[in-house]
Image 1 (cartoon, rainbow, N blue to C red):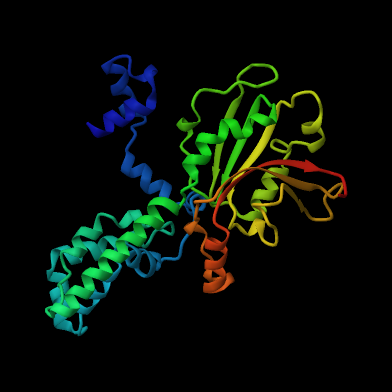
Image 2 (cartoon, rainbow, N blue to C red):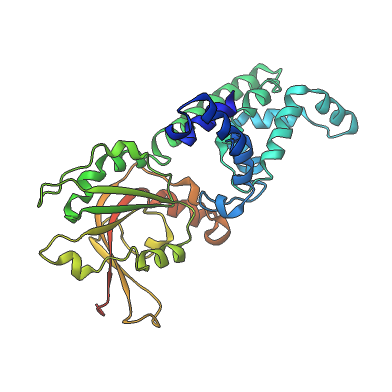
Length: 335
C-alpha cells in the first residue's frame, strides 16, 4: 500500500486515472521510497550537495551535542571496560539498538544530529543517576543549564535567518527590476520556497516577476564563483545599471561567516569585488552588492577546525554571525 501510494503521488494524475493505469505503473516503474533513499545516500556526489562529514561525526560531535551531561553518566556506567561489561552492553536491548543504529548511520558521510533523535530516548533509559545526593543535584543543574543554552542556540540562532530572509525576499529583490530573479542559497539550509508567497509585482512594469530558489549548500567557494560566472547565470553589471529593465538578476544568500567574506566587513560595506583568475578574458570580476542582513543567524554547519583552529573557527562563526543577501553581477572593468 505504501509503494502504491508513493507511486500514485509521484507519477501524476495521468497514471492514476484508473486502477488499471496505476497497476500498470506499479509494474513498470514502482516508487519504492526506502530503495530510492538508499540509492541517493550511497552516492557521495549527491551527499556533497548537503555537506560531507567525517565518519566519527555522530559519535564524537553529534551524540555529545544531544546528550550533554548525560553522556558522562552513560560512559561512567560502562566502566570498567571488560568482557563481562561488553556482554552486559550487548544484552541491553536499548543500548545495543542505539549504538548499532548510530554505527550504521556513521557509514554515510552526511551526518546531522537530527538523524540520531530516535536513539536518544534509548540511550537516556540506560543512564543511571549518581547515588550521592550532592552529585545528583549537580547533574540536574548541569542538565538544566545545558538544555537552556542549547535551546537558545539551536532554537533561535542556528540557521535562524533562513525563514526571515525568505519571507523578506520579495521586497529584497524587488529593486532588481527584473522579470526573473534567481536566489542561490549557499552554505545554509535550503529556504522553504512556499514562504515567498504569490509572485510579487515589478514596480516598473507592474507585472509579476518570478523568484527561483536554488540550494547549493555544499558547493565549494571556487565552485560558487565558477557557477556565478557561467554564461547561463552571469548578469553584466552594465546591463543591470541600464535604464531598461533587465530580463534576469542573480542574488546570493549566504552566512557572513563564510570564507568568501574573509578580510571584508561584509555587514557594513555596501559592495565589494571578487577578482577571478587573471587569465580569464578581460580580468572578469564578480561584484556583490548588499541588499539584506539578518543578525540572529549562526551557521554551525561551517565549522572548520582543521584549517582555522578552535578559536579561529568560533571567532569566525560567532563573531561574524548573520545571514546576508547580495545582488551579484559580473564586471569586466578594472576597478
